[in-house]
Length: 325
Image 1 (tube, helix red, strand yellow):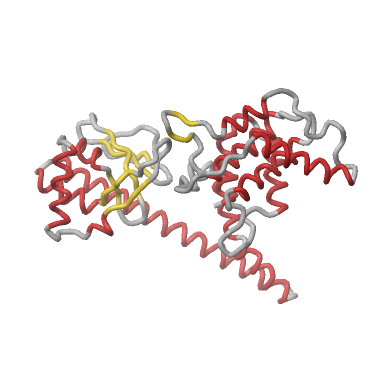
Image 2 (cartoon, one colour; image 1 turned 180 degrees about the vertical axis):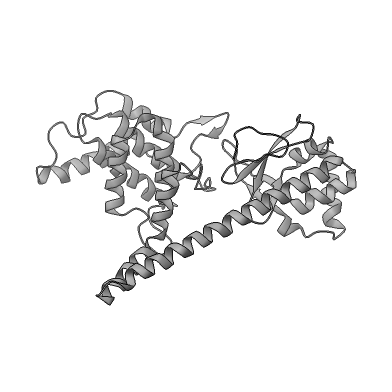
């Protein structure tokens, strides 16, 4: 698809698309899922050249008159630096309000939304076909394996690690979600400098017994470690820069490994505090009791962070979050 955007071109992202009005003077970042598109009241007011008060009035009538069901046509979405979620309205609501305010933009938006939903439906269908072909090809390959137990084991491994293949593909294509984890609604327990130093001392003692930690292990080079702990808890305009436990833990892991605040042991210390932060906030295990991050995954991500280009920071952190989610 061309990078140039005309009135009919679609600038697509993983979960949104850019709508341009026929005049070219209005652009809206529209949330899209597999079934419909969503706008806020403020976006609808811009689309129909009206006020939010009028949008609220018409939307209220759409639901109170029984034209549409409220539950299936409204959803909430959290955004960065905001404690309150945005209220989004479905295409059906948008069309109903468009009829009520008699806006010509309503017709154009409906046609645009229908085209984008059709395009995504076709794309999803093609992807399912590709996956089906892949599985059929794998089945044909496995059918030639003489040891049928080994063949079944291979298919089992491929199936059990399907999420891994998805994450690796999204990483290669730079399509990892911007925010795979939702902001927590619970109070996040902070990791204080005193608590962190106690954890590091415990690790040094444990590693020292086997000769894996020398005198320089865990020795702070300067005040940068305190700065890292402060940075992950910082706020802007009253809102947390890292609104979820997972984001703070991932940032802590990245900055300790990348910034080398200790003379020795940065990868091990970063990994320990990453796990400690998650565990402190009851986020280390899944509801069924299994660990969200196993030994091998932790080693792999620590080595990836250590060897990654600093320009890839956001991508690497998103990978950690994808693995946690």
